[in-house]
Length: 298
Image 1: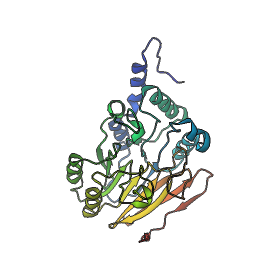
Image 2 (image 1 turned 45 degrees about the vertical axis):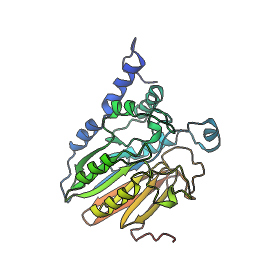
Image 3 (image 1 turned 120 degrees about the vertical axis):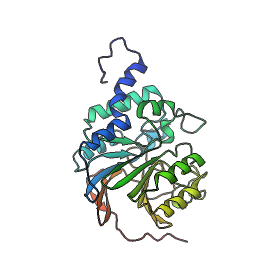
Image 4 (image 1 turned 135 degrees about the vertical axis):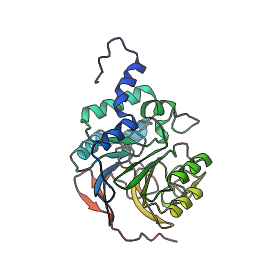
C-alpha cells in the first residue's frame, strides 16, 4: 500500500496525509484553474456506488473485483473537466477502509478533479445510528455547492435516509440563482417509487423530507438530480425534473427492485442549448440517454 513517508506514523496521521489532497475545496480550486465562462460548453463524469460489499455473501454472489478502479481509470481518458462520485466509497466509514480507498485513487492515477457525495456506507456504520465525523474530517462539508460555467452544482447529504428542515432551508437559499442548477445526492427520494419506494425496495431511498425536496426541485427549475444508492441505472421525469439513477460504479449488483443492473458511469455534456448524458458500460460500449420525457406507469 502507498504511504506518505509514514515511518513511525499512526494510522490517523497516515490517513490525514493521504486524504489531504482530496478535500473538496482543494479539488474545486483545482477545477477553477481551468475556468469556464457562462455559455461555455463542458463535460463532467458521474460515478456511482463503489464499495465492494459489506457482507461476505454479497461479495461472493454479486461482486466483481476491480470494477471501480477500471471505471475510474476510464474516466481519466475522457474529455471531462471533473468527476463526482455519488457516495458509498467504502463499505463502512472506518479509517482502515478509507486508507484502502485513497490507495486506490493513487494506484489508478486520478488526475481529473474528483468530488464526492457522502453515502450511508461512508458514515461510521451504514445501516444503524451513525455519524459522519470521519468523512467530514477527510473531505470537508457534506452539503456544499460551487458555480462553474454558468451552472450551480449542489451536493446534498441524504446519507441518514432523510433531508432535514435545516438542509431544505439551506437548499432553498442556494437555489436562488439565475444560474442553471444541478443536484447530486446519494439516496433517491422514496416518491420515485421505481427506485426505493415502499413497494419496490423499502431500504432504497429517503422518506423524511422527500416531498419537500421534490417540490423544491420543481419550483427552482433544477435541470437534473443525480443519485446512487440503488445499484442500478434508470431515468425518471418527476414534477418536470429529470432524475437519473447511476449506482453502478463497482458495488455488488444484488437484486434491488430494478432490472437495469449493470456497471457503468456517466459523462455529462453541458451546452447552452441543453444537456446530454452518455452511459458508459464496463464492456466499453456506450449509449446516449434520449432527451424526451420519460412516462412512468400509473
